[in-house]
Amino acid sequence: MYATQALTDLVPLAEELDKNKVTPGVLGFIVFAVLAVGVWQLMKSMNRHMGKVDFEEAPDPDAVAVTADATAGAGSAKRK
Image 1 (cartoon, rainbow, N blue to C red):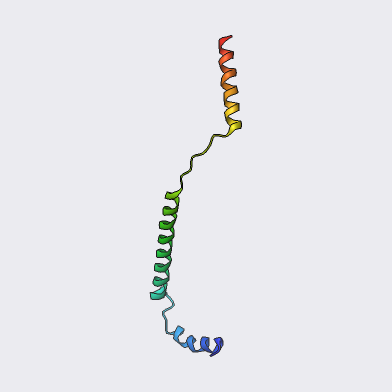
Image 2: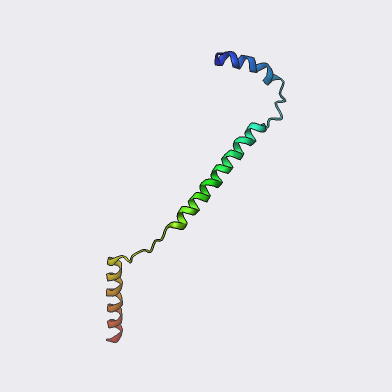
């Protein structure tokens, strides 16, 4: 069956619908429910994977050197 023929068969059915009342129907609910379950499973998986991560950030050597110089300079300036 060609797509144009299928559309011409569905046109009379569409004329019977109330144009002021359009709802997504059962198919829309099923699609929404499947998407919601998929997102829930992805979030659950992400939380599981993030729980396995053990990350401790090492201090930046440049930042430590700059901070040490700044505190040494500030301390000596106060003593003078």
